[in-house]
Image (cartoon, rainbow, N blue to C red; front, side, top):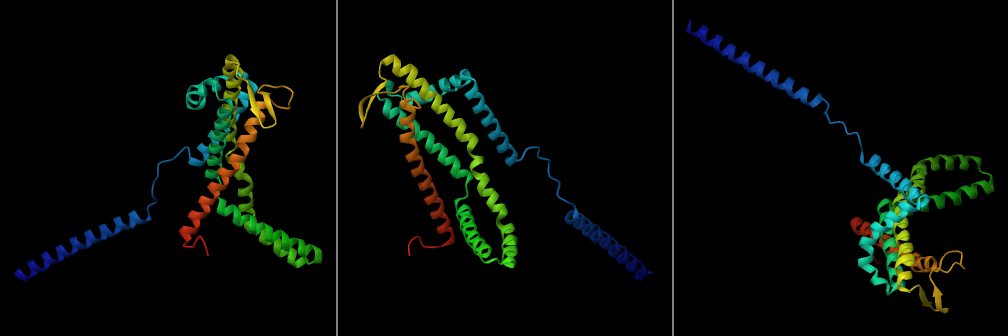
Length: 258
C-alpha cells in the first residue's frame, strides 16, 4: 500500500511538472512569435522636415510679395543683429561684410547637413565613367554593350536622383535666411545709415560710392554684399567638404597622406 501511494504521489508531481513546463514553453513561444506592438507615430522625422521646408519656403515667398511681412522679419532680426555688428552705423562696409559672412556660413552649414559629399563624389565618378563607356559604345554601334550599360544605369539611378534632389532640401532654409538678412540690410541702409548721413563709402575704383545708387542694376550695397559674401561661401563649403572627407578617411583607416 505504501508503494502504491508513493508511486501515485510521484506520478502527480511528474504530471504537475510536465504541465508547468508545457505552459512555460507555450508562453515562450507566444512571446517569440507575437509581433512587437509599437505605438503609431503620426509624424516621422522625414515628413516633419519636409513640412518645415515647405512652410519656410511659402513664408519666404509671402515675405517677398508682402513688404510689411518682410519688414516685420527685419525688425525682429534687428534686435539681434544690430547689437552684434551694427556698430551704430559707423562702419557700413564691415556690417555688410559680416552680414554676408553670417548668411553664407549658416547656408553652407545647412547645405553640408543635407549633403553626403562622399556619396556624391562616388556617384559623380560612376556617372562619368558610365557616360564615357556609353559614348564609346554608341560611336562603335555596339548594341549589346549599350543594353548592358542601360541595365547598369538602373543600379545608380537612385543615387543620381538623390544627388540631383539634395540641393532642394536646403533651399527653403537658405531662402528664408537670405530674405531675413537681406531685408534687415535694406532697413539698415535706408533707415540707420540715412539718418546718420553715412550712406557713402570708398572702394578701390572710387572714393565716393552711394550705397543706394539707383544707376546700377542693383543698389551698390547689394553688389558689395555679393562681392564679399559669395567668395567666402565657397571657402566655407570647401572647408566643410575637407572635414567630411577627412573624417571618412580616418574612419576607414586610410592615411591622409601617402
